[in-house]
Length: 237
Ligand code: DX5
Ligand code: ZN
Image (cartoon, rainbow, N blue to C red; front, side):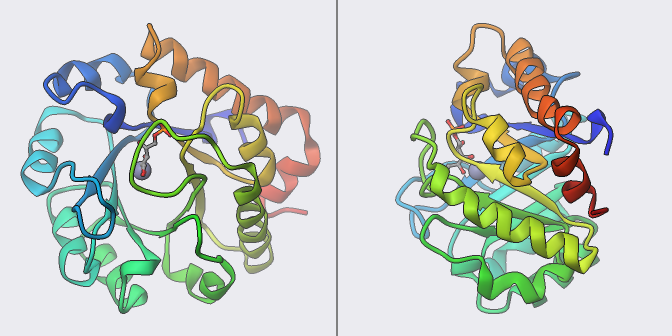
């Protein structure tokens, strides 16, 4: 797995919402995806942005939009984000009545399909349906707010998922979200994550582009220095 395979997805949640254009420009050329946290004040207490803003973001940037839906009833609402042109639409397993049906809808609408697992949800019960998905997002905090402390014990779920990807020969990205920063990203990469959301670590930095370069280097150093991890992450051994 070569170094370009690491995905860094800065989260707009940590940007200035009055200056989203500048926030996107600040990471263009360095970010792989732009992480968009959609919160509905029902599934999580926080309230952020919805379809009108996603539509405007899509029109304003060439970066692939990684929409993380922290919303109730994704069975009804998720596909709308795919129809708006999101690259990847991730909804929460805890909120979904029929996750496989949603995944099929998302793919039919032209986006990748992502399943998110919140802090208190075991990953095991979802391993069987992973072939239906392109992305598995494992929260490394409790979903709802940026700026929380990374919870290393949640990386056990990443290890479990990576093993399932390997044994099932799945094409599935494992994304981690919450508290990802220079002092935590290597541990997440070692556990088997290959996509990394970073809000505060990018937009809290003086130079967001430089912060992304540093995060990528730290994640890639795990890939290039540890042949075992490389083999596990590529599904090869
Ligand atoms: C929180 C969101 C995260 C958030 C991460 O529920 O899903 O994407 O932006 O923020 P940091 O990187 O600051 O923990
Ligand atoms: Zn998120």
